[in-house]
Length: 150
Image (cartoon, rainbow, N blue to C red; front, side, top):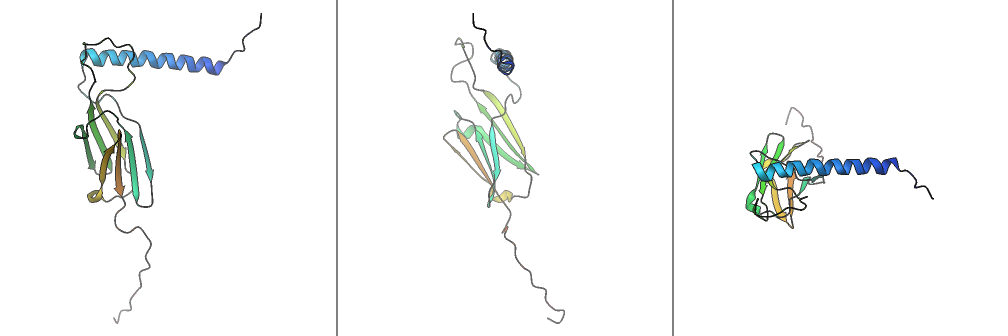
């Protein structure tokens, strides 16, 4: 009888996946039964710099634009929202629920100066894109030194 090759890495992945299923199930059941009084999840994001400024892309499909709130305070960009269930809690038998629902919050520390007055956001195809432009002209400029007589 041929012996199967043991793969310890695959065993660890299986344990991790099972653990995550148990954690997710317990939190989901708690949220569906008891409700939520605070932000319960944070959407995944990409945050990068371009020549014009910083860009945040946040995945939050299935939301209405009106349910998203964005604030810029000090050096933090704070995004809050609420994604509703597509079915009424207690009215359906859930067999699997992997998408997060309920209130969310994502806070990003902004690592450099940006022009708060020119921050723009758009929500397209389930992705929130926030552009944080750098202040003024970021190109170098040589400043001439005038004589005291002028």
